[in-house]
Length: 435
Ligand SMILES: NC(=O)C1=CN([C@@H]2O[C@H](COP(=O)(O)OP(=O)(O)OC[C@H]3O[C@@H](n4cnc5c(N)ncnc54)[C@H](O)[C@@H]3O)[C@@H](O)[C@H]2O)C=CC1
Ligand SMILES: N[C@@H](CC=O)C(=O)O
Ligand code: NA
Image (cartoon, rainbow, N blue to C red; front, side, top):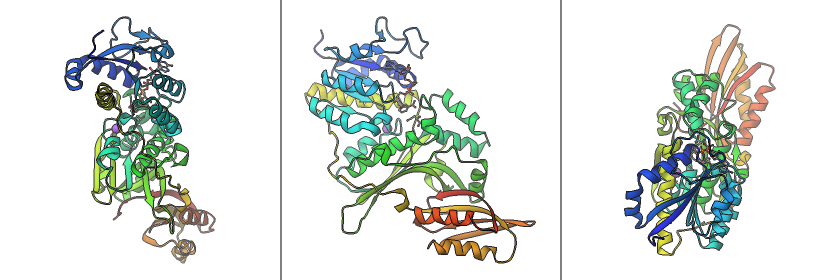
């Protein structure tokens, strides 16, 4: 056996796996030059040998025995692109136990049970890298983990789900329906195997947990993240945003919050929000992602690029593969988890935000005053009010100043119970300075 070669096994050959296998073959010469050793593909685990796939896998490499593949003594590196919790978790743990380093794109697993995997990697003295798990091709985890390791990150704000950004963008730009836009995103390979993970914000919440953990040196799991998806976003919300010269985006927001007399806590949330068209995130179209990072010394940084799709995600996987392979050859491992801070996670009600509320009211004297009073009763200050008469009813659009989410949601409940409020037609959080 050639001493200067590293043996790689790939688990899963779907949207991402097929592109990983393609790139491993097409870039073999360059990869060898960059790593200093040849990358030898020794097996590709699939569910069905005879399935049609987007890449030609060399003869004899396909196997349905993923367990057997990761347990082989001659495998140095395992790439897990099956997705989901099991069998991915058991396969990764087995790979580490058998002495292989692992590269994965599996944000769902990392956000649910990252610590188990990090501890197993540490114990085995092997690497576990996962740049592809957040924002696809965009290098964001490495900058957080390494480039910004000497700074204090205070906020991470991003569009981290390509499928939902694609859907919201189509709804805004071409008036496409939700179902039609989702189908297109699935055909383009952006969506998860079960697109509910995208649409209901689970995928973005998993990524937010990973981002917050790295940014704030703590452990945040998916269940710590407040989550709302886009299934409740209506054409009326999109139209309401347009009237405010804004767009609706699904945002992941991770914040470090000072706590009186104690260590800083974190607040991590995923929800649709209105942002003004002048905001840099408003110009993130289709399945692109963007992540803003605010830190004490560096100030604001923005990372932008393709957040989903087979080839872009494979680019991030291969980047990790090169790093892990170099570490392997050097007999070392890269930086592992840095979760020394053990920060409390704030409940959503304690998070400070702003609301945009559109209300159908009776068009008569005193209504505006009673609506303003409802906001005041919950100690919520109003930033702007717009009113349009439409016969015997009127539409009021109120944008609040910042308050806690608990105060704002109590205000909305209050409005819903008022006699002269016919319907609260749109409620959405607001990020960025609206006009
Ligand atoms: N598609 C994308 O844009 C991105 C995907 N990811 C992540 O990459 C991973 C893979 O995603 P996709 O390629 O999109 O999914 P996919 O559903 O297209 O591919 C997964 C493949 O794994 C195979 N598989 C399932 N169980 C298996 C088993 N026990 N043994 C062998 N093969 C098995 C499936 O048959 C399928 O072909 C997931 O963790 C996903 O969250 C991350 C970033 C972007
Ligand atoms: N389904 C995900 C894929 C990338 O992580 C998305 O749409 O962003
Ligand atoms: Na990435």
